[in-house]
Length: 447
Image (cartoon, rainbow, N blue to C red; front, side, top):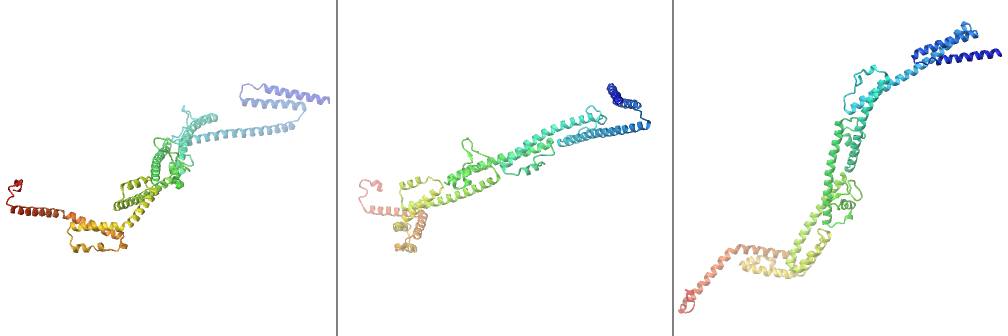
């Protein structure tokens, strides 16, 4: 036991000696030299120990071989680890190279220099750590540019989406028309950015024109609805039309560019509906206008025919305050109906008046008995047959005789002159018979 304790003590002292000697090797010498010295020192120390223990050559050879195998395994493992580190460096370098080339391509720039650095030094001649640092710096610099261009592109895409939403266009189709895809683009060159920017400008022009077009249509439709006296809640779309404009401003403006329950917006669908609605309202206005014009002519003729007082006419006209509304048409229809009924009650009186006028014209135009008898309607005596048709026939005869009388005016003037001349001649003949005609007052005139 005492011997074993001594041997352990000697072994411990020897291990401490090796450790101290190894620590002494931590000098600023080459790593390889340190490794060789450590191996030599370890071999020398082991031989001393084995001398003390009494190992023979075969035992020592076995121990050395085992140690060599252990060291060899450690070395191979270390080499594998370091090769992995080297390969990682190489992979990172290639990755940054590829990033740099791709970024430059997206930016529309010339391919970056991957052979030489800014100082003209061959990059391949540099250590891998320096190569990686160079390509990381180059890649980062280009990626910053890419980020800047992508930021511009994102803003343009957001603007395009908003405008297309307002105009009801397919944003993705519009984006793809400029070479974009899914809100992005592989091409980030200034030319590509300009192409997207120009697209936004075109859409903004389209939007401006659409705003003006829709505003004009809304104003026209509002005016037509008011003129026609149509209630704004007559339909959901009419309600949208009536409430679409902000009238608080000097120039009417759309309250929103998006369609809602209270605004038509500027979308394509509602634009087409506005055009269609305007056409409908214009057609209805023209229809009502033509109807009221015809109605007015009929009422005016009946007023004249029935000798309606001016006070009654003015009172009726003042009641018409609804423009082209259905209420106005209803009032006009009622007046026409009233006058028609009144005409029926006075039909005998009216036709009698017409016949008196015809008689007078026959006399003025010296119409013959045959001409007078040719107007058969004049000789109808049954009052039950007195109707609009008979009245129209009498009116036509009056107009015909008036035209004949007008055409005869030059001849009638000659006849009147002739008759005046005959009358004067007769008077002169009578005066000649009076022998004292030149003695009295006025004799000079008689001469």
